[in-house]
Image (cartoon, rainbow, N blue to C red; front, side, top):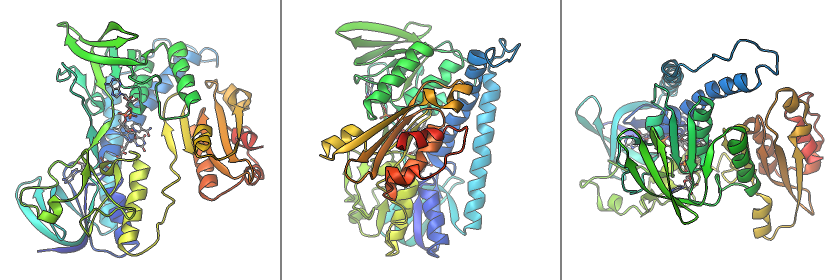
Length: 462
Ligand code: FAD
Ligand code: NAI
């Protein structure tokens, strides 16, 4: 029986990066078990395919919205060929998946295509996709099995017209009307894509605001832009009670301000969060120690070293809940591998930038002013409107802002929230500042090139 130092189960951004790090940095003999495609949700059904669609959708929107203003002619008949866009998305994904395969080979990680089931702390059974099964011995196991879309038990939600992001990403034809249940990150990104492609979009959100977990001003501003500038219907404080089928369309029935309302859709996207994926990970043949691994509503519980209550079995990424982002899964995987080897954490896991790829883009890191207040920290809060930024004006971007929160006494930067073009790229500057304890003065020492969006950062810290 082949023996490894580490078996990683799940080849998403958490698992494959951890496998590489374990092999390359710590010299471990590593196996990676993946039962679908390498790259996981992020590469195959998440980050990459959504942003590929967004790229095309936003180009089309900009052309139609601003083409004439910027001196372009004869584009009014430009439409999106959905089949070609679907193919483009598959090509991008295919290219990157095969790149990960090469990385694994170069990094001397042995990849098994099959379902990994943990039998004991030192034994993993792999049910191979090509047929048959094999047992692998190991000193350590890292669970990185990710998450899948959650579908709440709303009557009618089992209709084939009610889909999740997985199926919507596979759509290869245009639709007239899309209803989105859940105005969180997935809901708002898909609303941007389909609205730009010419679909009538309605968002139904249970909470009083869309993107409710971010700075309140961001939710309010995004809502206004999506409604007024883009014509997206947004219903907040609205509870979906049922989904019906009128023979032609699915009809979403919801209650808003005590009124029962209905909105039809060719498709209804269910984007109300994701649940940890542990299907097939344990079996009746698993040892008592493995069966006793602690879970909380399906999520695997770990300690600060990412180790479960079964010694030698670690878990990271979406399957442990917390912040479900690709770069968080990667950072947790790298930390878990370091801890297995008695090394310190290689990244600051407490400074997590989070990005939303709407138009304008949204990005945040560290504390917001409200969060700092709740913690009893006295802060200075600075805000720079991007309507004064030359690059924003010349490229006809939506108005936006950059907010910086710093400790009142020391000037140390505690957090930033941005809503403007290229926010998702620029937030890393603030992540550097927060992780390394930089002050407003430190950040304002730098010369920001002109004309750039990043000049807004320079202005915001002065
Ligand atoms: P996953 O990426 O889910 O990978 C887990 C892998 O494990 C899967 O490939 C699965 O097949 C495999 N697996 C499961 N069980 C077994 C088993 N028993 N044996 C073998 N293999 C198994 N995050 C961002 O940071 N930025 C974004 O822009 C972004 N956009 C997103 C858009 C959408 C539509 C979605 C759905 C998610 C998005 N995310 C984004 C979130 C991101 O995709 C996840 O946080 C990330 O993929 C989690 O990584 P992971 O390694 O924990 O798990
Ligand atoms: P989410 O947690 O961001 O949003 C779900 C929304 O649905 C919430 O606002 C919630 O109030 C609402 N909701 C829940 N039940 C509802 C109901 N019955 N009726 C109406 N509204 C309801 O989850 P989402 O959007 O599914 O995304 C899952 C995860 O994927 C995110 O937490 C994020 O970590 C990740 N993701 C990240 C992206 C990025 O980084 N750009 C892009 C897409 C996803």
